[in-house]
Structure formats: C-alpha cells, structure tokens
Image 1 (cartoon, helix red, strand yellow):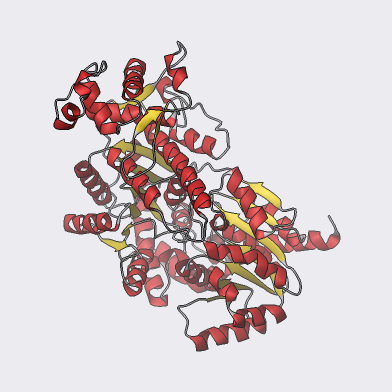
Image 2 (cartoon, one colour; image 1 turned 120 degrees about the vertical axis):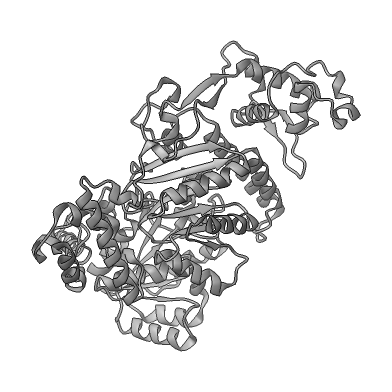
Length: 629
C-alpha cells in the first residue's frame, strides 16, 4: 500500500469518527472503503443494518469531486440527505419532487462542487440535462444502491437499472463504481457484476446473519392473524413497526381494524394517491403513526433505524423478499422481532400472482416463462421456510450460501436460541406414512387434480366433485384419518422436497416430482412442525413492559428506562421543529448509550457511539440538560 493510499485510509478513519461519530468500522466496511479509495470497483453484499451507506459516504468525503448515488426511491434520497446534512455534510438529491427550476439550481450547484454526494433515481440517467452536467462534472464515485434491481433473477427487477452501465461508459473519465445490496444469491451477484460492467471488483459478503433479529413463524387462520397482529401492536405500543400484506384490500381492512383497536397505524399501497402515500410515509418516519400497514410497494430503501418489529400478515413470494422486508427491523442493531403469519391460502395467492405477472413486458415469451419458473422455485423455498422444523436462521443462511455456526435441528432442542423453531414450543412430528399415502394417491390420480380434491379423496369425502369424477372408487379413497389442512400442508412439504410438484396455470394440479421414487425407499423420512402450546404473547418469550419501548426494556434500571423515554420525547420535539425524522437526530442505540453512560459534559457525550462533533454542537446542550435533570 502506497503512502498516498495510507493517508487516504487514515483520513477515512477521521471522517468516520469526526463526521459520523463512530470509532471503528464494522466488519466489511473497512475493506470496501479501502478498495474504493485505491480506485477499485466493489460489490458489497451486506445485510440491512450493516452500514452499507457508510461504505460510499466515507470515501465520498475523502475523494475530490462529487459522488453520484443511484437510488431507487425518492423517500430514501430525502431521508439520507436529511441525515447527511444533519451531520454537517454537503449533500443533495435530484428527483421528480423538485420543480424544473429547483432541479436546475441543484445541477448548477453540483457542477460548481457544492455537494460531496448527489442522490439521483436511475431514470435520471436518461435526462439530457443530467448528461450535460455529468460530462463536465468532477465525479469521484458512482454508488449503485439496491443493486439487485438490475437482475431479472432478483425479486425487485427494474428495467431502468439496465441503463446504468451504458451511462458510465459514456462518461469522459470512468470513476470507481460501487454496487451494494442486502440480499443477493450467487446468481444475482454475478448478474450485478456483468450488467453494471464492474471491472474486477472487490467482492465483500459480510454475512447475512442478523443476530439482533428474532424470527418467528405461526400458521394461523385469517381471523387469528388479525387478532394476533392487533394484540402484538397494542402490547408494543411504544415501538415502531411495519405490517406487510400481500394485497391492497388486505392493507385497507387491517389498517382500519388496527385503528379501531387503538393502534396508531397508517397505510401505504400503490392504489393511494402520491400525495397520500407521501404524507403517510412521513407520518410513519416521524413516529406520528408508528405502525405502517403496507404492501411490498413500501419499504425498499426506507432508512428508518428504529423499527422494532416487522410482521408479515401474508407469506411473501420468495425468501429474498421476506429477508429484505423483515430486515427493515432493527437497523440500529438493537433487538427486534420478525413475525410471519401464514396459511395455505397465502401459498395459493402467491401462485396466482406468479401466473398473472405481466410486469416484465420487455421480455420475450421464453424469457418471461424462465422468470416465472424461477419464481415458482423461490415460492417453494419460501413455503419450505414456513414448514421447516429446522432453525429458521440456519434455513435463511443456507439459502444465501452461508453456513450457520449453530446446530440447525429444532427437533434436537439445539439451535440459535433466537427463533421460534429453536425453543421448546415446537415438535418435529414424523409424517412419513401419511406422506407415502399421499404419494400413492397422486400417482393413482395421475396428476389430474388439485390439492383440495387429493385431500378429499384421501379423507373419504362424499362431496359432489368426488362423486362426479368417480374418485370415490379410487383405491386410496378414505385411507387417511387426517384433516384437509394437514394433508395440504404435507403436500406442500413434499413439493418443497421435489417429491411432488404443482403445475402452473389458473387451476394448479398436483403431480409426481423428480424425486418421487425416493419416497418409496426405506431411507425416506418426512417431519412436520407442530406447535406444542399457543404462541406466547411476547415474541421470543421476551416480556414486554407496559408503556416502555423494546429498546428501553433492555436497560438495567427503572431510572435508565425512564430517562430513555424522556430522551425520546426530547428527540421527537427537536425533530418536529427541524422537520426531520427522529432517528436523524439520534438513533435508539445512541439514546441507550446516553442512558447507560449518563454523560454530564460535552466530552463524555462525544464518547457515546453515534454522537459526532456536528451532532454534539447541534443537539448536545439540550440532551445534556435533560440528562442532568
């Protein structure tokens, strides 16, 4: 490493401490920052909350010129720029929220070197005015956030991302290109490198594990889902949370029910006007409506660090989508809950969405079918996550190609200790004989019928369709004494294992899968998850304290917890006065650090992680006064 590079990295360490208030880089951050400062392209795959933004923000402040940050959402730009300006860093965004005159002002100021970071949407790359700016500007770095959007194999494919590589190649001088994402399989990562034209990039995968997140899966009827969601939100009334639903009408119904139950909840989906979406999002980010009920149209890039729980009211279509959405909890590193409520109807809805998908109109029929086939495989994996008796954390990590350093068998009573399968609340029940009976029935019916009719035949149902098709004469008619729900669940388990397969189309049929013959061997075993007792009122067995937020509950004394809540009130009043989200003032973890350390001088406050000189100057006196009181 040369003297110049060494000096740049030393300067990066100073920027981290003096501008952002952190003494040390997190795992992976230093390697990425060093590579960028040495002029190398990078691909950073880091879980949500691992500090991806600092990996390009710190180099942007060290390198001469302006860093261009390509980000998919307007809300993300606004919040990140607010946070940077709060830290005393010159930054701006360029998007459709600004008038043409305001856009011209931003471009003029950027050309004159007024900003170290300029956030833009990928669509902006096709604007002739932006091209004119880029051709004569001093661009130090191009950072691509949510880089998985460039791949049709990713869960958030956006055609506008495909123009990034061509834009970069047209620049008079190619800057360093840095791509970042939270969730990418090996195939998607390879796609990112190819489609963005990264040149021999330094590739850092910091690990997908989020030890601060507690994962829980519950199979519930629709009625029980609503009651469970409402009781959890009321129990954690001091905390901020996101509740995801698969359909707009479900968002409307659930948000109304939560408000009626006394929960301060707002809503977000693509059917609302842009004005209402923006107002509701701002209410959530500012903690005026701490609970957001939304479809997956909400959340990518939302930089709200103090989300203490994410509830999925329906099962998502892929493990990538689930982990990215669940990962919006606990971005500040503090404990948070990720709850997934599901039932068989969610799987049927997800299959319907796959077959109806017409978003990728630019694809040929063959390409579109290839994408749908990949979506079906991802859905089977997602269903497997809901059904597995293994450790939920280990299941997620294995999917992303990472080995867990804890045992993964829930049945053995071992595991991570921080998911619902690794508690004594779950049993792994051997359903091998039932599974074999189902396989015989599917073979006899020759793959001509759906799950419902297969279950009816096995249970000996006398309904009209069974009689109409003569299925009451089948050899497997009435051979099982089990509920329809249990049989359907075992069918899904067999689909996950590729012993059975479910066809595409409006009326999915159950047929034999590529591993069907293996089910007849002595080695074949199938286990099904069974909950021993009703779900605990508080996720993970952690007791919720009435009127106290989850972060405050972790403090040791009542006095510290009371101080935390007082500092939250102070933070909210300052944030409202400045028109910024509360977490932009200080994160929950910084407030907790203050409560534990009880600083009484500026020097002692500066020693708290997350407090830098800019924030000390701006807010220090008010917080020291409250602590002194």
